[in-house]
Image: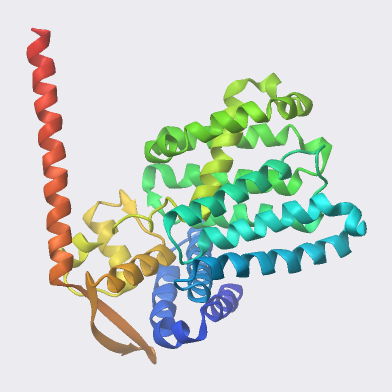
Length: 271
Length: 100
């Protein structure tokens, strides 16, 4: 509980100062009460959901009504972190694909959360998708570990957020799927865990079965990604588990990306 | 969320989460962060407003209420869903009639 209190203190600090002054107390009260009623995973889910809201509020405040401003800020952020990645990677400019992928991931993530139109956020998500495409390819580009771990943590966070949202019938299975993707990405750098990945991804296929709205929305994209990743799946030995597993990887990843971007999900509707 | 505010009166953020769970017998539940995100958006389009503030545990808590534009939006949405349901029932009836 002490750890949770510490987490709450820091989560509230994530809000932009103006917003924190106006709403911080209110949100903190809600979080305190929610934690009293919650158990285990739900507790973490509430803390994480507020942290995600805080971060999105911060990004949106920084990009208020500035489409190109958002793009510029995303690119600056991407360049700074990409340069850091290049230095920590130890390959300097020889590692330019790493810069490209890391930059694309960050710029896309930033844009997908920015306070701009839905189509611009979708472009951001597309950039994340392209970057993710490279993330999941062990041959094309060696992503700095920091990037890989970041992606894994983002997906884990997403899974925990789902654990406290959505309908009762689907919330746990969606959480399992997202956490599965996160764990897989985190462990993906070790060949011995390659068979753990498809096992975890099967949960992703179930997402589409219990949440038709998301499944319909992303139905076209998994097919595309499945087709382009055919060779990779062969290399990884995934096809020995059959096409449902391959499709599950794509569906889980894409739904995770779309939810993280806020294009779908409980807060995306009219209320 | 608008339905909960219309039915249960002014509520604070976590109160809304509880009201929605209660109204749907636990079938629907919103994350806390999601609730505050939606409240922000509904407030920005004028469909909810801050009804009152109270100090609890030394901290200010806001209670939200539905506004007239909010009631109109809720009514429009209910009409749309009613029309969809009517259309669905009509199609089911014609399918049944055609099958005879």
